[in-house]
Image (cartoon, rainbow over all chains, first blue to last red; front, top):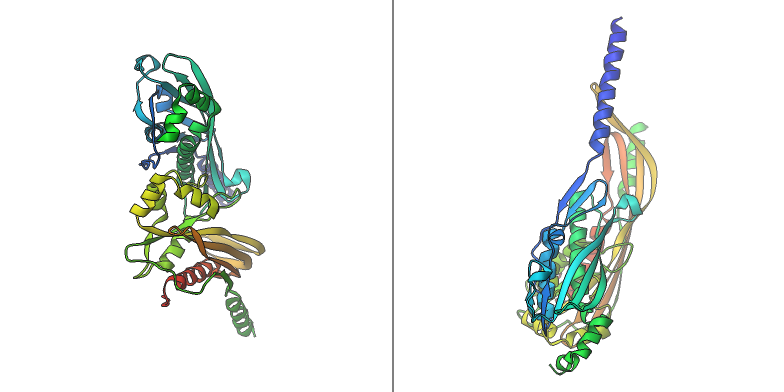
Amino acid sequence: MKVLRLTTKLQLTLAALAFALTTGCASSTSVVVEADFPTVVYEPRDIRAAVVFEPAFREYIAQPTADVLIDIGGAQVDLLSNAFDGLFEQVEYPASREAVDPDTELVIVPSVQQVQMSTPSDSYLNVYEVWIKYSLDIETGDGVPVDSWFMPAYGKTPDSLLLSRSKAIREAALIALRDAGAKLLLDFYRIPAIYGWMQQEGRLEEADSS
Amino acid sequence: MMTRLLFLATAVSLSGCAATTTIDEFRPTDQLMDLAAGEKVVVLGRRDAGHYETDRAFVECVGDKLRGPNINLMSEQEFMDSIYPWFEPRTAPKNLTRLTRLMEVPMVRERIDEREIRYIVWLDGNTETGGAMGSMSCSFSPAGGGCLGFTQWDKESAYEAVVWDLKDLTEKGRVRVDSEGTSYVIGVVAPIPLLSPVKSNACSGLGNQLRSYFSQELG
């Protein structure tokens, strides 16, 4: 009888242990990306622009998988502000499209289309990867659409025993944000529609002669 | 008999833990490289390959080996921030032609000159683990516990360093280091790790070789 009671106790303990382990494994990861982004080394062009960061963009929290949340809202506003300050000589950041100054030449409204993530267990590679797909709606100050530019950004960081999952995801997201800034700075004036607009406005000669 | 066998196994294992490192270099000249007082060297990792990253710890390790009383080093992150966005994984120049074009951008040239950055050392490569064999099982109970078994794995490091001179925009040297070795864990009650220092040997080999480009003394 005593042996039977002991066996039951052992079974219960094992069951409790197994339950604790199973529920413990199903953890979720919540990451806030914060960083001081560097000022850019880039010659701004004499264009007066307005960039509208809508509330949804400012407070954007990505959910690339069911158990991962990445808060990139604040960081992407800081980073893109830095990049736009490098692109244009005069930039304003009004709260909404309606608040844009009528003398503004270009109005840009960025938005996030999608954020994807890959971990070593997904890809069998020794890296964490984050993709951020941005869309930039660009129009003239008087509301004529110029382009809707798709801007993908990518960041990866090596897997490491010393790096926790959340730290690895944060680093990969940070690298992806820096990549977004780099792509914006290097490719913005190469967008055919922007090039065409500058040609039309007679801005290419100014830029080439400066 | 048992003691002798254990002794033999340990001796074989320990000798097997050594890593074999090969260093190949190419330099157009064997003269020391000029580095005026105040001029800096920056060690950067290539991160544009799809399936691996030159990890920051290795870049820092080579930087530490290279650093000396006459060699000022700027950290990778400080350099990348000071020249953003031109040396990000997507935008960094892959060859001297691209570097020459980049240095024609006045703001970039000014920033490099302002920070007195004379040489860039590019590191590209990684360390791979493979050939895992054996098995070990560990068990613990209120009465005690222990491990029994034997496991081993191979590590292989392959890195290349390329030195660019930002003053005359030329390549000053190229060093390749290959290091390989086998690590073991023997489970006799407690697990005894016998690790082969593959990556640290690659770092020392590369760092010391690069340091000899600037100065005769080795640390």
